[in-house]
Structures are given as C-alpha cells and as structure tokens.
Length: 321
Image (cartoon, rainbow, N blue to C red; front, side, top):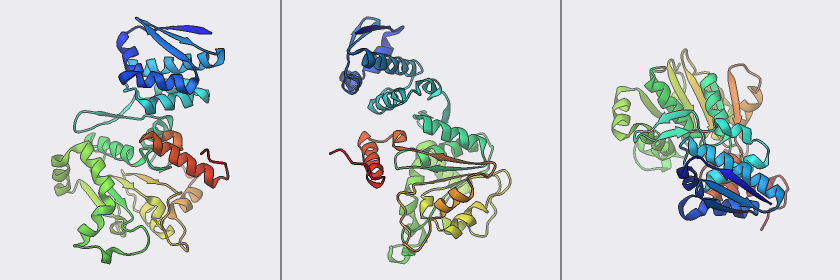
C-alpha cells in the first residue's frame, strides 16, 4: 500500500527528516515502512496497517514542526509510542505552553503528556507531588515554574531543599564547613537555577534572600509565606521529615515535592515519607499527585530502556536480551 502526505512548507519536511535523515530512518525502522520525499509530498509505502500508523506519526511530527518544536530521536520515539496507544489527539496541545524562558532565551516546554499534566497541576494546585524515574524533568520543570512565578511577582522567594544525606547522618565525614558538606547534595538544584537565571542573577537574588537553597533540616520551625518551595529527592525523607516539611507552608505559598520511590536510600527500618504521603494525601483537595513513567524520560534513549528494564524485572516480566 502507498499513501501520499501533502506538506505545506519544505522546512517542516527538513525538520522531521532530521540531520542526515536520522529521524525518518527511525520511523522506517520502528514501523516497517519506506518514506520518500518529493518536493512538498511525503510518500509512505508498506503494509496497510503500518502505513496508516506511519501516516498518523508523520502528521503529528509535522504539526509539532509547524509549531517550532525541535524534532529529535526522543521526540520521534515518543510520538510513535503515543500514536500506537491511540492518544495522538492529545499531542495537539503538546509544547504549546512555555513554562519558562532560560537566561539564554530558550523556551522551556513540556515534552511529554506526563510533563504537560505535571505543569498544569503545579499551576492549579497549592501542593503538587511529582513522582517518577530519573530523567522525566520533575525537578527541572518545578524550578522553571518557580522562576516564572518569581518573575511575575506572584511569590517573593524561591526555596529549594532536599534531604542532606542519603543513608544516615554522615555529614561529619565530609570535608569543609556545613555549606561545603551539603553543597554536593544540592548541586542539581543549583544547576537548574543557573540555567533559568544565569549565575549573576542567581548570586544577586541569593544575596538579597530571594533564593534559598538549603538542606531539609533548615526548614524546621519555620513558616514559609509568599514562597515557592521545592522538596527534591523526597523519597529519602522520613515520615516525620515529610510531615514537618508539608506543615511549613504559609499564606501565598506553593510547594512541589519530587522523588522516585524506586530509589529509596533510607535504612531498612525507615519508611519513606514520600510513599507515606502519597497514601495519606491522595484525596486531599488542592493537592495533586502526578506520576511519570519511562515514556516521560527525556534524557538519552538508553535511560528510558534502563528504567523500563528495571520495571519489567521487578514486576516479574521477562526482560529482552
């Protein structure tokens, strides 16, 4: 069977084909079809079912290209998976909203439906939990939302925190003063802030007290008003620490809690405060729980495969060799 897709602009075809046609080769390989380009037409040939699937994938990719989205291998794989599951209609809104503009002028957008739902939940709710594997953008998008709220003067402070240790209190074994000891644990948060604000603005706001990056222990006894608070690596909080953090929330504030419950580093006799909170707070109004899967991983494709392999192994499925 053969199907012809008419394309309005040649640059959209160039974007979808990718550098050295790597994107279109991926479509051909994954869907067992052949795709040819002739001027403003795409010709797809193969089995009827595969051609129809490829048509829907290519039309979705063309729509993303028309909106200025960068089409890479990760995008192609995600669109193929989404179309296969029958959810391609939801791709129409993907990437439309800009969460934040980085210091270099790059727009930060949701790249998957899971990320889109997460960003919408942060905007609508006072507390949002983002739970899922590494590489799904949980922390980065939360920082982007915080910076946007700060720029709009919706909040006065951005507070980023995470458990200072991963497996017991061992800070004393690290060299330097307290700040030197906790900095390695907070580095991912620094990196995201530098990306959004630039080092100069970050240091300026840090000196003024508009930005605070501190270990979770520093939150005890405080009431945080007019702040955007992000608790990262929350799977490594205890029950008591999680309750302490959630009850710091003051007027005009918003909180985002991120973590991966498959990477808990607490001692065996400790229950994760994140797992506990997800059960206790699932039906509480103004609290959203967003769960990511391996499909939402936006790092190297191998990260997605690793996450999927671990999930399959622990769920008792046979892993492909």
